[in-house]
Length: 477
Ligand code: NAD
Image (cartoon, rainbow, N blue to C red; front, side, top):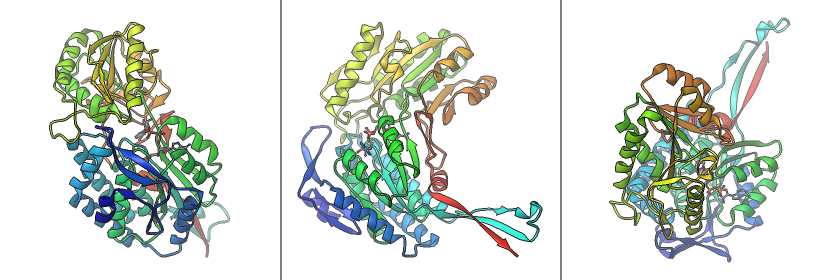
């Protein structure tokens, strides 16, 4: 790793070798906008070589105990190199350094959980003898790897979300061709280096950097790819599904996450958690709180508390220990968020806090007097903006939360058990978090959305189900 970090020219990782291309792409330091490194840009021949190598690698045995050992070793190396990885995250994502360290610690956990799951992949007995004429038969299922999995990942959590793909895929005995986001590729290449050191057999992990749309197209055209696992925007997810044909596709997409604050909630706790979880990573988190619905009588007190907590957040250089909010991933994304907020204000919204942009830094912003048809409520903002509206009745607020194209996770602050259970049944999401904001995730839980938020579940145990096929074995005795 030291050699590739020093010259800041990163190659593709194909069949265990680093390959530099003539054409290179720039990687930008997201805080000062300076070019910090160059990455290789894969062509079709590289994509095909990577897929071919991944397919070949499947022919060499890689039993579950060996997968366990490699994944555990990789997790340990990640812990050992936490600071090195965190510094790269601060630079290429613009993620504040304390939050970056948190991501690396979680990524190491994701690998440990994947390692543990590698030992637990099993089928079940099937009582075929219950069917007349099958009295002398026995049957059971086994789970076999899908084969070559193309993993395409987003910029916002580029170590842990990559580990959520390669951890379970390798644990289940597959090979992976990884295509990280073009704006945050370095930590994915560092992971490849780390897996090599952990003893991963050559070819089991390939990493292709460069133009996302082109590489995506070449991967989709290559029929030796057996499955696509994608985390990113609904637009690209839908495109992948439309081109993947009959192959397996798992999609983790966007959301405009809602969180409800009921009258009986602990408002101090609700404001504290909503303030943290609306603005983490400058709001560039798929379950980031975007819409808050507060019951009318609690509105004034809640807004005061939310403003007080949010005012304390420090905006600035992600490498500074005191920073809570760094820059957005691109200047044009901060400009887009600014224009959406301005549009909401023209339509009657009030800025209760924030609303200013300085380059790619956008202040944590609280909007009130919003309606559900404003872009800041209806679409995914993916920036540090939270809109707070009111409601009177429980049925009304459930309908408001469900009036969305998305359904990843929602939060509900209440001590009313009846309301919590009604919400559990009626809110259309992959996960409901009671007495916390929508943005709660630990890495072994099932995680994934409904509606335009995607399909398929993450969390190593659940991802392994997607990344294996169930095969039945019938014995005629
Ligand atoms: P994006 O869709 O722009 O890019 C994601 C990946 O797709 C990148 O690697 C990109 O290079 C690649 N890509 C782009 N065009 C492609 C094409 N035509 N074919 C194949 N691949 C292509 O998303 P982003 O901006 O990196 O990430 C933000 C989005 O990701 C948000 O919508 C967010 O909600 C979502 N997200 C979802 C989850 C989740 O778990 N549900 C987690 C994180 C982010």
